Structures are given as structure tokens and as C-alpha cells.
Image 1 (spheres, rainbow, N blue to C red):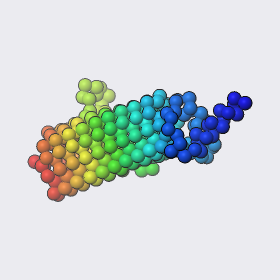
Image 2: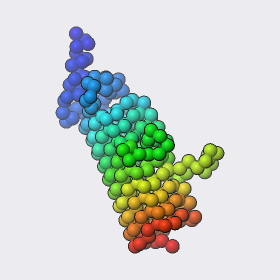
Image 3: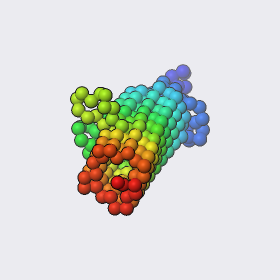
Image 4: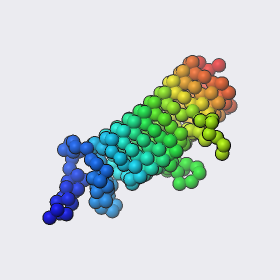
Length: 251
């Protein structure tokens, strides 16, 4: 009887409308939902609250986490491959070593989150089909050290991003954040720490770098049309072959 009741509760969690699910879910409950999701179907946590939960190393591949409250959660090492996190709330979340290939973070709130050493590809180079999406996402104040190559980050809020390379720990070569070939049109990097970051061939039209530190950054071949560099630190920044038409504050 108890087993039947547990299975019934799990089924209700999977099928019930998100408006009914007001209570927070614990790690065991989340694991039960993932385990009970039939093969070929996608687990759905859309609109639920998982705030503060310990979800490290769980497999959410292809799951629907749209609008889910993941505030302050531990997602270290979690698999978010192909997951939908559209409009998800992730302020202060820890995503270090999380797998994000093909994940959609459009309009998600990742403010103050930790996104270091993300797993973004199966090999050394990111493929187009592995790129993640951060359109309109809020990463203000987030701490990142990862590759966002080819990602769609149009209109993302990256103000006060903490992405400068730590030059004290570079014994095996330069480890740095990379946005090469990413679409950062209309992105906001105001006041961000971007020293040594790689923006090679990125789309940065109308991007706001005002008061940002882009010293030693690589902007080779980047499209900075109508971008704003007012008050930005550009010491030793590489603008080789960059498109600077209409760029403000460039010296």
C-alpha cells in the first residue's frame, strides 16, 4: 500500500499543473521524479520550487526547468544537457562543473551565480550543436571561468561579471573565459572584470563595455560596431582587425 501511495504521489508531481506545486521539493523527491519519468519522455519541474536544494551531480538532461525556482541551489557537476531553463531563477546558484551543452538559459536569472569550469563540449572545441543559449539572461555579478564559444547571448546582462583570469594559477598555460564567435549583440558588460578574456570574432554590436576592465583581452576580428567603451580599461587589449565603426570611447 505504501509503495502504491508513493508511486501515486510521484505521478501527481509529474502530471500536476505547476500552479498546484507550491511546496519545495527535496533532493530525494527530485530523484524520484527523475527515476519515474518514462524513457523517451522529459522530466518536468517547470514552475516548481527547488530553492536551496542539493542537486549536485543529478542528471537533468533534456528536462524542462522553465520558470523553476533554483535560487541558491547546488548544481555542481549536474547534467543540464539539452535542458530548458527559460526564465528559471538561479541567483546565487552553484553550477561549477555542470554540463550545459545545448541548454537554454534564455531570460534566466543567474545573477551572482558561480559558473566555473563548465562542461560545454564533448571535445576540445565547442561544436555549433553544443552551444548553449543565454538570450536576455541576467548574469550580473556572476563568477565565470568557462568557454561560451558560439553561444547565443544576445541582450544578456553581464554587468559586473567576474571573469578576469587568475594570473596566479597559470602554470599549465592561460586558463581564461572565452566568448570567441559568440553572439553578444546588445550585451551589457558595464563594470565587468574581463582581463585576459577571449572575444575573438565575437559579435559585439552595441555592446556596453563602459567602465569595464578589458585589459589584455583578445578582441581580434570582433564586431564592435556602435559598442560603448567609455571609461573602459584597454591596456594591451588586442583590437587587431576588429570592426570599430561607431564605437564610443575607443582610444
